[in-house]
Image (spheres, helix red, strand yellow):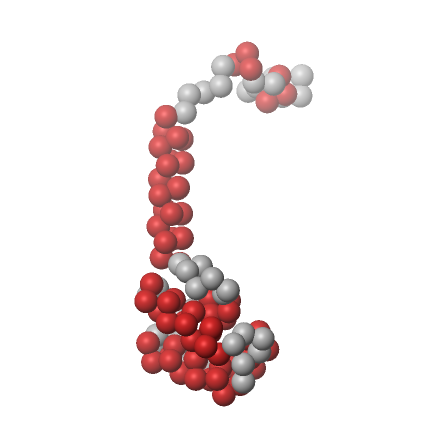
Length: 113
């Protein structure tokens, strides 16, 4: 892919994601990462990504060989919150370890005996 094509993709991203910044440094890095990716593939990957995510893409999201695979930060955030809630429930339902199973060196009042 040519650098001008990378800049075209970045302009599309900037139009749809107001907080996406374009700089010479970013354009150079993205170009070095995408130079082996055909422009048509990258454009299709970007379109698929933008249809599914409210967050701006990374270069990796555009390079993906499988356009259905991208970093869905909203989904990851939701899954993390669900997991943390599950761990909290486990913590609340946990029962103490029977004293006979606690190693002597960890028992209260017996450390250093």
